[in-house]
Image (cartoon, rainbow, N blue to C red):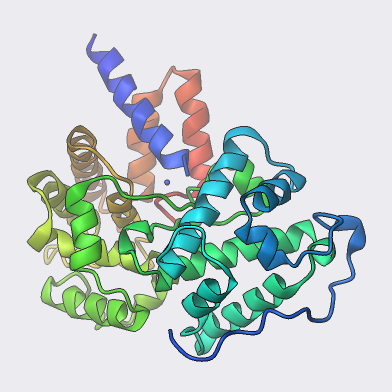
Length: 343
């Protein structure tokens, strides 16, 4: 009976790992630009511009189907785009002007260049937008919404843990509403909205919580799309539930070096875990406690072997628990391939 419970927990864990784991100023110009001349791969045959397709429920659904997605995968992309548009504009079913206003404040650096590319794609006519460019459009829209949106609880983006069918088509992010009230409160009331302010929050808390040994030199290890969920992780000691705080402490153990000093570095390229992503996964109390127990066991195993990276210990633990179960072994192999929590 005990083994059944263990395998049930591992199955839940493995399932979690492989599931789908930016203001004011002049209006942007969504007029047609030079075409991309890829008519054989175009997503439609009408003359409507891509922005009209994206803002139309029927047009978006048709574009998603033309990429080759059906069923749950198609519904997921439709949901993701809807949430991104809502987050960028603050309204359901926005129009062109509202979307332009939502994108207007993004002007500098890599995000500014991405915004300009997105507006070029949105300005294309439907028949001149290739399938690959439609996927790029969705990826850019979701990424920018996650970083500049009005609702932080809709900002969960993960490039590694997206479902297989979507990943095969080139979609890079998943985007879900956070149901847990405690987590939603932290995201909306504690974590800043501006990307610049999020980075300041991260730097301040990395220092105050003694979570780095390298004077913040390792911030380049943090993907930009994960900055808000990392800030959420840093808010847990002050604002989290008891179970969330236990998981935070377990992740600190995973981040410790096996030396006598036991220095902690949560962004160590020699121990490149991303287990802080768990706080964006809407885990319930039982799941939080299960992850805490597992990570403590993994940290202890790695410490005995004096391993700086906890990746091998993490997979040793899962391999032992999934041993003899073909279905769990398959899920475990998928986790290894996708690198959900380790680079």
